[in-house]
Length: 504
Image 1: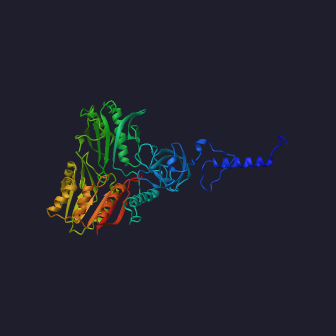
Image 2: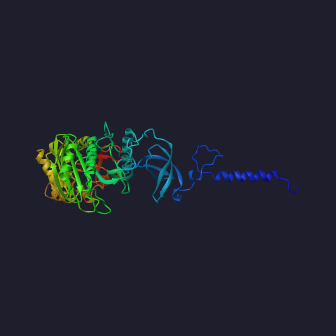
Image 3: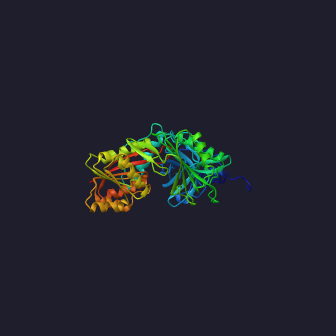
């Protein structure tokens, strides 16, 4: 009869509706439970795109974090494409929102941690993740050490093809806080007065880092007292945009062994108002003060130091020691930021060099000569090479001060001096190289392969460039004996590594 319900047609229509509804549901991982009657908000729905290439900014994805990247970010994969998520930790399952959808990778931010790492902790620093100085305070120290070992393994696997390397357990610290002996902080005005701090990542927003937990307490105290004195005396602070004002940067260095303290103000001019009053108040506020200096940098540049330094009061330099080595540190002199771990690092280099007292050693990229001077008592001859003239002069002075008469230092480039020495009959048994983060100059690698030392010891602060350079040395006839990571900078993603390569 007309108008009477057709029960079979109704049943088929409902089945089709149900199938359509199921197909349009947000993506969920296998085994997850969803209540059909409780729909999530549109903004919270997980994308169900067929491939990573189809992802768009704003899409929601679920990612399992496999490891840390070299900048401390969590690294996982979405449909085989790498995903980088700041703040995520290995082992965590993250619900994330896509912020970048590039051809080779995906950038995302955490929206929800669905599975937390057992190593996740509360970062003690109130400006962690803002100032940019530390990357992994939210990871337990045990977790940090494990993650840094994995960063090395991944780099060697990626760039050398070696799935397994002889990786010695990382050398960590008993107390991974308060280890930095030097602070170099920008000055600026905030809502509550003068600030000494660091710029936030990718910006010129100055972040106050008062009481920084990785700086030595004496450094923090001296920075704060100096800031108060500058503010009280109303000494003008440099303003980059207008190119006006005076004091740009404050640099404080503390001698762990000597317990001497050095303050350097970087200024835009050599005209310092209220100079005598400034000196008097600083000496009263900071009893350990040994030296007050002013470095003049009149240029509107990102470089911190200028070429001229004036000692306002006290000693021209402070004294410091590493093991039995003593150093004189002028305001601009380079010195390792973590002296306790530096001893472990240099002892690892000595073990890798395998010295018996008969060997000739080349210390390439030698800086102020610290590694070469450390090795000198165990070698027949050490020659250091450095391209920065001031560093070479410091190295020569350090050699004389410490009686290392078998160590000499030369200004120049290793890739040029080394072949010249070999041509004249000098053939090193061991070459040690400690290059900047960019790694070894390709011409230097060629020079090493032509020189053919029995041992090549590489000290690196960048696992990626280390592994890339290692591949060239492997192809050139060397074998990788072992790698020893050293945690020079706890709470950050940086890892220092020493590798020993031996000629076949």
